[in-house]
Structures are given as structure tokens and as C-alpha cells.
Length: 151
Image 1 (cartoon, helix red, strand yellow):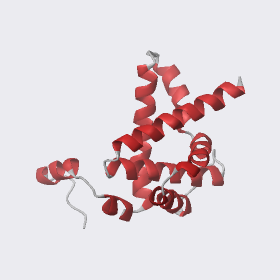
Image 2: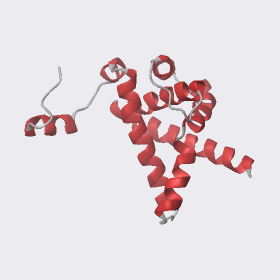
Image 3: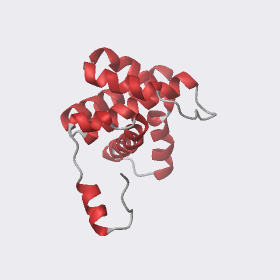
Image 4: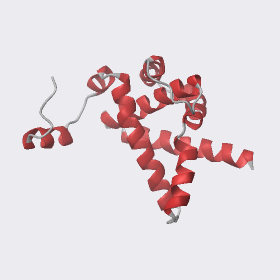
């Protein structure tokens, strides 16, 4: 049941909401991908700032290389063998969810990217912070390897 977006108690409750693994996995895969997209984008921004970058134009252009569908698709394909059964189910649910594919992305890349984002959202909402951090670090390393190979 949806709550009022303007009620102060609802705001506080929603921001403090914690989810069990079962509750998080029961959410709509696109809702998981929605939060996962934000969490992953935030992590990439922190990574770029943590590397000492301060030029916003550079960081914006560079972050796209990590968050675009083709990069996320590459990442999730590499990570699949390392995922638990539950994590793999989340990726499959996200990948198989029907959504509008942007013009600048291949449909297969976009579907797998949605699966990756759903996994990130699931791990975040279920407070699996160690696992979330480990997969984000691996994803950055994988994209860095791909970028280095293109040079």
C-alpha cells in the first residue's frame, strides 16, 4: 500500500526502512534496479572523487564509461559464475523484466544491465554491505581492465 509522500512520519519511516532478504527479493525487479542504479552511480562518483579528480566535466564523462549498459552487461557476465543462487535469481528477474530499451543501448546489454542494477539494489536494501562493496569493487576493476585494453 502506497503512503502519502508528504506526511512527515511517512518520510521518516521510509528513510529508516530496513528490509530482510526475503522482503528485498520480493520487490519488483525494476524497483530493485531503480535503487541499484542510484547506489552504483553514487559509488562510481565516490570512486572518481576518491581518486583525486575534481573536474566535474571529466568526472561526468568518465562515470558514463562505468554506468552505461554495455559496461554493466560486461560486468554482470563476468560476475555470474561467482554469484550465489539467490543473487543469480535476482539478476535473472531483473534481466527478464520488460522495460523500454533506450535508443543508445543494445537490448541484450540493457537487459543484463537491469539485472546488475537489480542485484545492487537487492544487496543494498538487504544490508549486505560487505557483498555489495565487494561486487562494486570487482565491477570497477573489470571496467578498468576493459578501458585499459581499448587504449
